[in-house]
Image 1 (cartoon, rainbow, N blue to C red):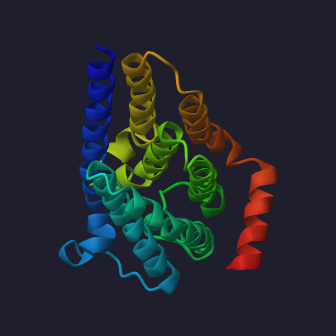
Image 2 (image 1 turned 60 degrees about the vertical axis):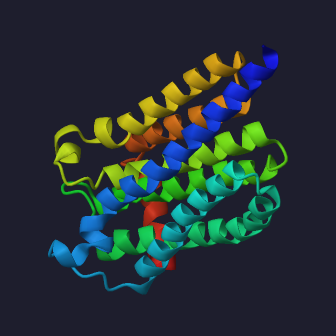
Length: 244
């Protein structure tokens, strides 16, 4: 019975990560399709800054990488998965750097995706900490690369970290209607559900998974009230003056 239960848990996790690997690119395409990938069909404003194209390229490669890594694990090609992990480290660093410079440029020069009624320097806190949290989660995933349960759960959280920017751009007026309750609330509720289901199925709480989930969710809701503080605005001003 114990063997069957372990096999069932592995099968469930493989199918779960397969579902994530399918839904992740679909979510990104729905969110960023009208303003980037399929912008020619939506009469969207042109994207002129090269840093945006570079960041979009690296993020697209990250989505492809996640799908590939899930495939290699499903097909028990562990060595290939591990070798590709080294490329993932370089890609992750590139995402962090281009993400910061893209966000800083948008705060200084404006962006069509910036929300109306929010000062650019205040909104900068959102993409800036998206990158910070990604860096922390991904660094932890690299640290736990030889601990499969921790590693794959941290990689799942990097996906959840990138979901809010995508669903905030869904062309259904949900962001305008519900604001953060939509683009942060949905991923956060899903993350909580994932932790609960993971604990229930494994009969044990993965503390690293819980800590990462708390960090992710807390970062979403703490950055919003802090965005208008003098400390943040001064820091954002320094960023846009120094790096843009």
